[in-house]
Length: 137
Image 1 (tube, rainbow, N blue to C red):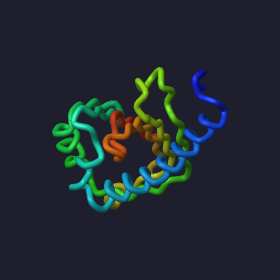
Image 2 (tube, rainbow, N blue to C red):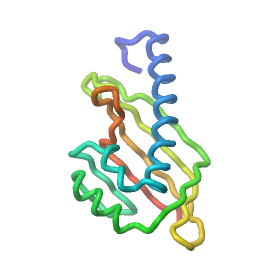
Image 3 (tube, rainbow, N blue to C red):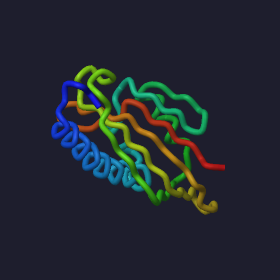
């Protein structure tokens, strides 16, 4: 916990992170599964993605990478969100979102995955700074 925050202030940040993370994850997976052409609106221009060990940097390259992935259907089993401290984020509202669930590509069998996002607020809109996706195999 940041020493400059009271317990009440920190608790408020935790609640805000949980609400934002839930809303973001619904938007992200709906966009990925049904409106992939709109994914660019969710990432910062300087964002990074590590998808099963494949490192991609920059919005244009991220969108090209996602264009190579087959149509998907994600189902979340769990979600955890927490605010990052001001020391890490430079005072910018930033949260960590962790998801766990299954994903099915085209007609393949569902696979278990986990994904971690670092989000930051830009003009009151959450943007992905970092995205890490991994199958649990």
